[in-house]
Image (cartoon, rainbow, N blue to C red; front, top):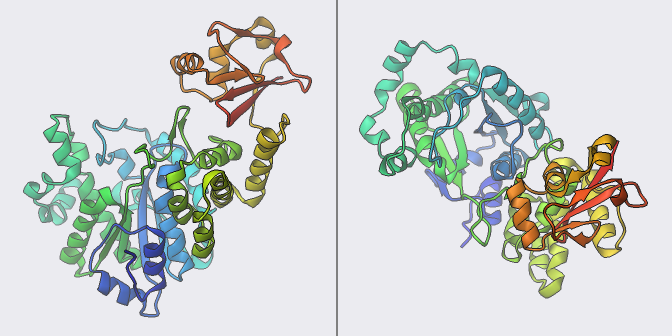
Length: 417
């Protein structure tokens, strides 16, 4: 059942399936209807050079916050990335150098320009390194740490699950929840931020921040979490055989990104249209009524609209047109993703396993062998049956490329240079 609120923001989230939990929903709803913009934030640690599809729900929360007249803060975890969030992890994250974190932060920043307007302070890009990296340890323990009960910290899922499984949890990671709570207080003091949002696995951490804000600043703060999204078959969002589905075009091409959404399971199409596009709900309802083969039209709409959000309308339409030429018109579209290979390397012969791995269609040679046994790999539309096959210049098409295919929907052109 969809809850009804007075505020546009909560009504949008409720209608599109974004809400898992809200602290004091009536008080938050009243605040959102007060006529003054409400400031809210979500934190993103800088563990890679791009965010991936698994972060999209959180990005869309900030998008809808701004679209309904409020101020979002995208908090970059330049400080907390040095510690590592243990939530949902069976082992410690790899510690990154400061140079790695700076590089990753630059890649992540670019994503938010596609979703948020930062002009005239309409949105804020903050970095918790600004206040965490310079903390005095003893002062922090005295002023902030004294408000945290170790007994209660041990009941947090991020800690409890590790201990129950007898998996090591470092003292460094144990401090993460304290730092995240302190972030909320700092953003309240600096920007008047009163709402923290995140995935449902962050509920305990966010509530810690609410409690710390009350103790240190006498503030009334709020929490809102969204469901953790899995596919209808139970798979984790944003993972494929070739790896994560990144949001930056230099890591996953707009065409491959379009194909990821085009391959959505039938049972997920309507839910994903609500979460990952801005398509009106009445139009989504029309697509939801499609049955049989017609559901492919809904999948194409999802792919195009989701790709437009991240890569722009022109790139989305180009990806859609490329797919249509490739699959519906049978043409070898020159706009398919292309991977360059040295002419000398091709002249000497390139192993088929290496070629598919180089093209990013498989994650490893072992995965390529399994796909060959299952009949899943093709070269120039011919099934590969021998994992020792070597590709040479003789395999070039009249267009001067070699077409590599994984299944029916993923293709890459190998082009000698």
